[in-house]
Length: 292
Ligand SMILES: [Zn+2]
View 1 (tube, rainbow, N blue to C red):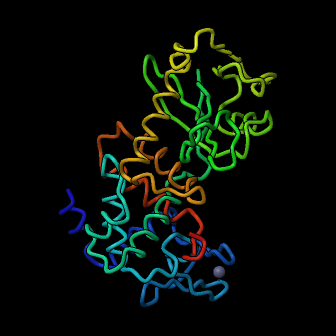
View 2 (view 1 turned 180 degrees about the vertical axis):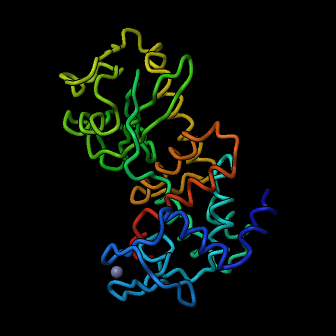
View 3 (view 1 turned 90 degrees about the vertical axis):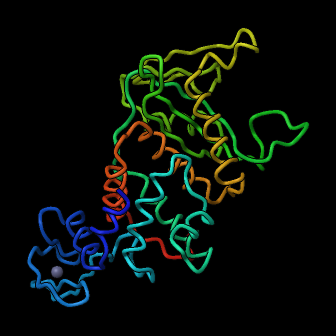
């Protein structure tokens, strides 16, 4: 399959045309004037007939001003989502034969930005919600609020006895405002939301609220079994593939990558993962190196 991909996207032109078909499925659209007619020029440029703007298919996407050949990007888009446990920058550098670690790292950061689908739909049905943290656990520090830990809220859909789709987000605190804003943004109104007894979840409107209060500390884990499973997989992934070396400033993008992988964990087709990532890559804003 990798050979098929390498044959199909062996040239810059093949990659460029593929991106153009994803970006402009119904034909060229000028980002300047929304004009729909253009002349094809050399070096992958389109010239808008209406405003005479020169448009590159990669402008305004994660590939904007890239120094790497598109063929290398395509191999990365194939490799990154298809590895079950994800890829570290060092691993990607090796696979693609890149000269610098920094380049591989920046590439991964950009691909992570393409792992959030713009305008994706909300979870529905019965959804468990709970919080966790990321950071070095410090002995003697008790309590959910601390400066050095990043707080993460997790929502996991119930799918029979298993887990459906998930959403993860870093929040500044565990106030009612933070938690209920998250719920409103990721869960469809009318759904059943299962939480623990935290006061901040009280007064949820537009949802059926299933509040599960811990009676016995030892059984606490099983009150929200799906989010707890997701949290343990997340931590294992951060500790394993990335050796725990994930700073708080980049954590959001790792959460996006984890979510992307998890929600497509049963997708049998690697080709579909590649297509999805490429499709989203032309929809998200470019991220200059200094912003990574
Ligand atoms: Zn134009």
